[in-house]
Image 1 (tube, rainbow, N blue to C red):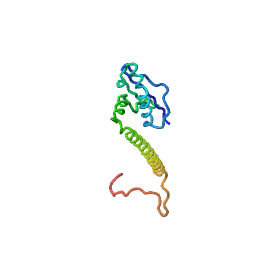
Image 2 (tube, rainbow, N blue to C red):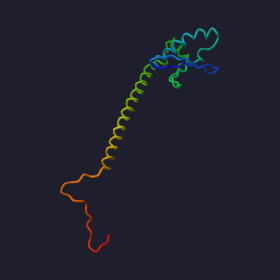
Image 3 (cartoon, rainbow, N blue to C red):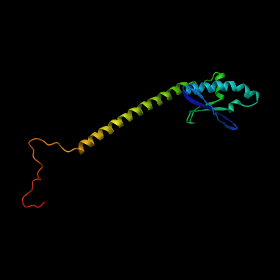
Image 4 (cartoon, rainbow, N blue to C red):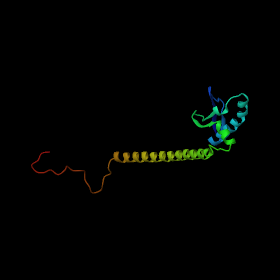
Length: 150
């Protein structure tokens, strides 16, 4: 579960949500905001306020806004205009991309770890003295050409 915060943006500014709700995903958070906006709509009209000027900004536990819900979408939905009908699919796609990114990052981390281990083994092999080979004496001086000084 992730904690989502439903900040309310009005013409007067931002009213931050200090409590938030623990929800399974951003799609559920969007649906929660939509339901709350529907419930708020009649109260706003009774107070002679324009609900279409309100927006929920849905933020994650890090304070990043992950979704917005303009209250006008409630009206569009009531009129049969699903302006964000693709949102749940988009949210699922975003979640799938995030999951795939985490999986690929873990695979890259594993590859980096393996390369590091391989480099350590190679370094150790290069530092180790060469084993003596039977039948060979110690290394000799390179061949010198007569009449030339080293």
